[in-house]
Length: 261
Image (tube, rainbow, N blue to C red; front, side, top):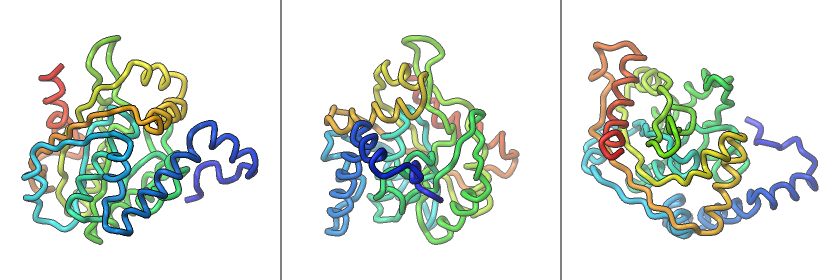
């Protein structure tokens, strides 16, 4: 797929990319990619270098997966860092990861080899969903980990000060797992989200993403906890249709958030 904004004139793109922090973000990613060639984890070293701490509980569930390829499905509280944090789970097992993510992220050059970019409509459907579903299945058959945030939308609070929860998950996560015959590892992402995130998101998701990129560039300390749940095999979901199975997965991920909220 053509990278985001690739059709813009180069001088204009250079100015906009610097103002939006994209140029600086690409520099950070390039350094992390260089470290990865020397044996460090690509995303893990990127996050650690920017003072973003990722902790994990339930790691034994990840290690119990008896299949070479599998899906990691998590909630979407941040819109940028949560998917990257989920990707570190694959890195810790020395596995290649691919992420089903918004087309906007193709703006980051060294992320492109890991992206299955989706063009998301306002109703959270994907214009190229069938293509990327097939690409995800192929990636899983190659023994990779595919990271997905099935809400396809930032977690939002019902009212000011209330906990933020995902919109109803899209059923693609279950359809991919069934088609590829691979397990799903549900993961609850827990992190504090500042209120400005939601204000920026109301303007436009890309505005929110740019603000978050600058927050990362300025090395604003972040703590992310990943709670890994037991893997779910396609046969575990046999008695439910795609939507019912998706709801059960989302409940598994959301329950710790309801308890803590």
